[in-house]
Amino acid sequence: MVLKEDFYRKFFLSPDGDNFEEFVQRIEYFFLKLKPWWEDPRPSPTEKDEYDANTKLPDNISNDPYAVLDELLTRLKRCRRLNSRRFGLTPLPLFPSLIAAYLTSLQNPNNIVDGWGKSGWLEGSSDQVTPNLEKECIKMIAADIIGYDRRKASGNLVSDGTLSILSALLVARDKIYGPIIRLKGLFGQGEGKVITSKNAHYSIRKALRILGIGEDNLIEIPVVNDDEIQAFIKDGKPFSLQPHWEILEGLLKKEKVIAVVPTLGTTETGTLESIEELTRLRDEYGFFLHVDAAIGGYALLVEGIRENRARGIEKSDSVTIDPHKLGYIHYPCGAIIFSNEEDHELLRYEAPYLRDIAPTIEGSRPGTHAAACWVALKTLGKSGYSRIISERIQITKYLAKRLQEENYQLLHDVHLNIICFSLKGDVSRRKLNELNKKLCKKINERNNFHVSYLEDLAGIRVKENDKEQCITGLRLVVINPYMNEEIAEEFIEELNEVRKILMRESGIDLKAT
Ligand SMILES: Cc1ncc(COP(=O)(O)O)c(C=O)c1O
Image (cartoon, rainbow, N blue to C red; front, side):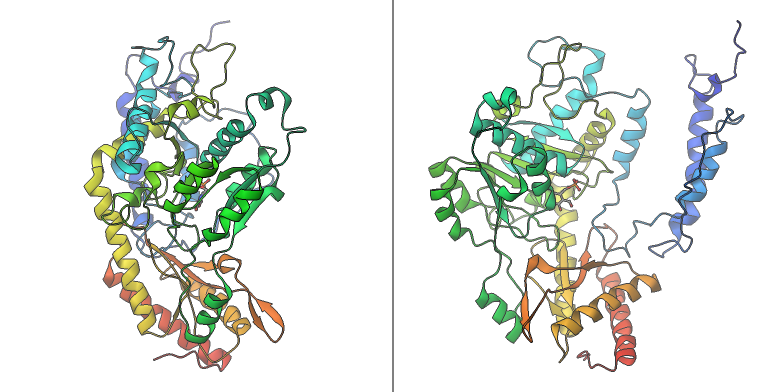
């Protein structure tokens, strides 16, 4: 059978470059079609996307390679905009790194192959480019951001923070129980604990489930005590939310502890949990010290952070850091960094058909993200990241000051680019919680700004008429590089306006100035 030329080949770049220019022009054409959508200042589109549960695989190939892209464009215009009026955790990706990913995707590299391979099989091979970029990213992050020894540190880019934490706890588990569990599993090995704080991200609990350690073996150290709760209720004193690590030593004396995981930049409040005292305890008791710096890692480049709140991070055993958060890379791009390459080697698995595969839980992995991350690190450098992040922290602190002046209640000390606050008034916490939810909903409906809702601050409970109440609030993440004090002021104005409406509707005095 002779295949009709052109039938499907027009969908692929031809080897002689015949359709290369058309491909590039089409990219420009589609991007420009998104421009008016991008320029709309509202953080959310008005049209909602509908999931089509009856969608079917078409019987026939499309005549036009670009036809379906038009349909896609219509739907993409229903996506949220990452503009300066959206207070969320998703970063606007740095555009050189986006271009790096598009360019690299042309040759579709797979970082399943190892940048760290000892056999030399891939040395100098054309498959080695993006694994080399990945290795260089790891060295820059390990030595120049975290402060590990450049010669000894190792690690991998992974899909996300969750996989990074899973990798670290897998290594911690194997170090405590020894290589036998690789063959026999954890059966009959006795229980071991992982200790973190009440502020920690749920991915740690999830890792315990996956690794067979069991969620019941997670111990969460409290971040508030009764005195702090009383000071919050009586004087409106924001919580410091620091883990009470002083109770850790007692636990270490009686439990088998696999790992302790402080968080540098908690999900809800951006709190930088202290690390230094844990390094001393690790030296004495011998657990694995993993720092979850998914959010706060890049902030180590901001002057003062390493010296004050992150002291000791360079003495930890491993760190989770997410380039897809304050690294300003598009999803998905996390990283696991080990201070010692021997620990990283514990992730290695021998593949039957490949000589050197990367020591990581994943199989195939995108080389595009190594390129994007590498370009971002090389483009922004220490001073670029430091400037962007320190200015985001300054704006957050400015917002904190203005919110207090306008009689809102700050819920915690501000360390990073995240702030949670609540309405204030002579009403119960239960009522304030209800009103916070309404306030959040109304702001988002008006669509001049987008904020998130804080459902339960650090699991804290306050007693009211014999009932326990959680603390809710609004959560602002200042991440967009175009966000400035002027926009912050516009937000305060909008907030006050919505508070007035709430007061009218509820008949409650919400302590407006
Ligand atoms: C502190 C912290 N750790 C880990 C994670 C998990 O990261 P990912 O969503 O990339 O899996 C998050 C996510 O927001 C986080 O805030």
